[in-house]
Length: 383
Image (cartoon, rainbow, N blue to C red; front, top):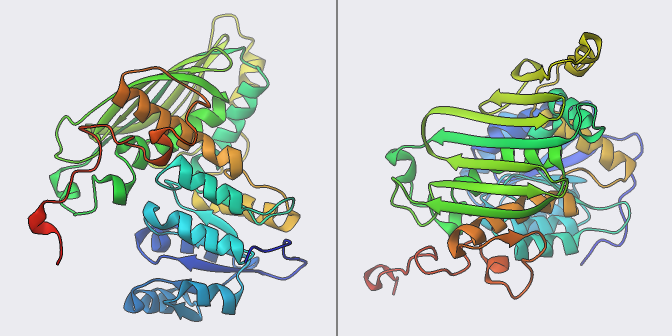
């Protein structure tokens, strides 16, 4: 049953629960929750693997290990649930948490399709929540927030040209894990599973996109999805961008560069950025005092799960929609879906055109021959 109203939070600690106890839960979500221990009380965790959830709870000082999600939500009534499972489970688990009245913080990729995301968005509450926010932590570093403000205010002039690069390396051993490289389990190739963070940050900096033209290929790995993609994107502002997503690149880097009329702003890192990873290069004639203001990013807050969680907790207490939820959380998935549609159909795709009835709305591969999931051989079908 849908929650009819948001829960009231006064001065008490926020009750949280964790869904999924694998690597991302241990390595990112639990440390962030623990860092906010004065404001957050983690009361339960869920996993279908009883041994795993018991070990997770013992290691994290969490009192209630659970193997039944519905029972956990009913008995422990968390205010906030973090979803750390593979993308194929995100819709069902997020909707269950929202219907219980809990806010949700869900790992990327948000879910395997726009159709799934629409179901999640429909399950959110009205004014005051509960809401489901996607983990897009690269938006929340101080450098990113400062660059976003400069670009939005046109301090450096209009944004003109941008480049977004996620060029990483994954070897054959990485794809030897059976669920990797499949649409059903991984949700997509490097565009979806790896490059989504940089593309989301690009969108956060430049605003709405209007059209995309893309290509994708399987250059090395024997997988269902792509292992490399490239795209040309036009933004509503008129700015033009190139996007490259790869798992074939031994010299690994994550980079965004935006050329504005009066300066270039750039961030170069791998899995997270600090103020030191940002650089602003002025055009000739820029006043040194103005440039000093552009380069002053304030206190150094690294991009991290903790930075986003801190903002999410503040939004939860205030009852306001958090960043990365609703339409704001959908925008990166929509661009990725459009990228796949353009690449697989050899067409230009415009913002807003992929809706119910479009095969790419229901699945990122669009059931296109050569890209749709491979049929299971008869010898592998269980009897």
